[in-house]
Length: 134
Image (cartoon, rainbow, N blue to C red; front, side):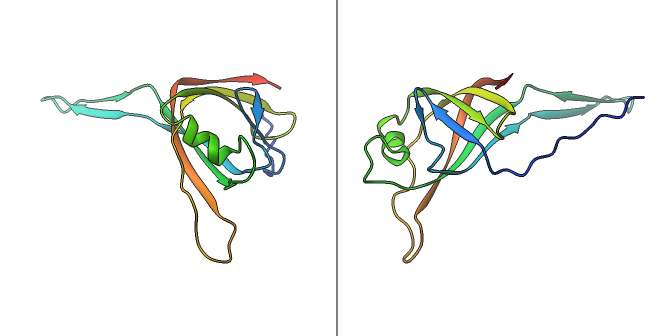
């Protein structure tokens, strides 16, 4: 059995593009999270059958709010609310690029005193993300 190498990385050099714009400098976290439906049935003879459905993905994005810059992510998410956009997320420089279509939602406005105002959104991904070399 071959030993599979592991190229773990420390997340410091990612990139996030939405359409033709790049939002890397505002994003502090991006994670694609699957939610997989599961079911288990026990028949009258005691046999157990397990089922696993297709993963339904969501993009969890945290970013620094910006209300001064034209086309900032804060402002664009409000403008795009309810529309589908193509996202390209590169978790690490030189790594795979994950492309997905997500339905945009408006995010939080404002926050606590003496802090950098961040906002987080969880966007539903349409279909499955695709993975390709960068």
